Image (tube, rainbow, N blue to C red; front, top):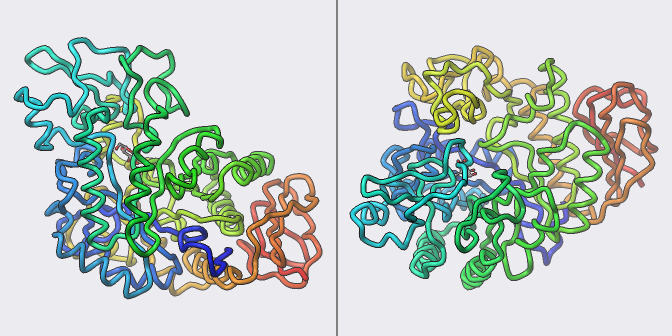
Length: 505
Ligand code: GLC
């Protein structure tokens, strides 16, 4: 919102996450790919985003949807070729869109040449091999250790097909600097860093009591990791054009988040406290206050490829409530200072698909927990582009997509919504266009206004945002005009689960 002449592009950018295998399939094999993304870039331009983040498209056995990388400098034939990638970057830049790619430094695929060497006993020091395992559990459930026939065990904080690197080996550090250079040389504008608070583990790999993602523990958030990001920052700064990096850092404590975005480290970190907040004005206000107080460059995110889509999270048992809240939540988020990350399909108001048949589920979380945990496939269902066809326009006609799509895609698809001014897609377009317009006039600082019970009112210069999270209608604060609202607003009254942007003098 505050594109001051001297502020870098990413500071207030709207970045759209593309989960490549579920976005658009140009090759007709039922899996999304880079040419599919390239064809749909004009859709993203007209949606009004500033940048795209592409999830991993590197050669991979796909044990974790591509987050098991076998070659960090290539493109898996499933997703296209390096030439397809270069064409995509070229077209995106022509359209004024920046491109971020995912870098996965915590682990590789078990098919990576280094790990294959390690299996033969060569270069095991690039990974974490031990004679005995400790008590660590995999984030995907089950033990974090797998034993080889020769008796040694290796550590994997995720699936057993994702062995963790040993970042205390300088070869690993040098390799990743080179990988970053490889993509920077191909014109990428920045990186999303997978598991950014992982990488280093406490010396001696001590047993732990609590396995959860935590700010600092023997498993996560080791202080040594910051030296890595200082080196990455130097590299990014040595390239022209404001290249940037955003870290995936899971923590409840904004002070920890701030450690990653010190001036000589990463440019941004995802603010997962925002997506973890319940639909409550007090919870939202606390996250906003804590973030703006502690983190120099704020970011906001409601959904991504790892969490239940926010329409469903907010929906309790009623999908109508979920959609109303999702739309109101978007307006609130877009009115905040800093940058915003959107997840593909939220602009269509897509819900989580909760009834996928077990045999179609592919997430290692589902497999490793033996079906006890549903896993993340429900937010990864291929996007619906048209009202008909075997895959609603995701693949060539007659081709089944890699995950089945629900019947409601017949109405929720992009084509139908583009023709309906009341659709969620058109609402997103209006909101993003309005935000872009306001960017020239609105200051970074946010001021709280007195708000009735259940509501949150705040202003930034001449923009006031009013959100009603309660169950009774509230009166809007004084204003000149209503710029935009997430639902019907009449006679100065804001209904429940609705937000509005107001112009004030
Ligand atoms: C990150 C990714 C997630 C992946 C995991 C392991 O959390 O977002 O999708 O499974 O890292 O790479």
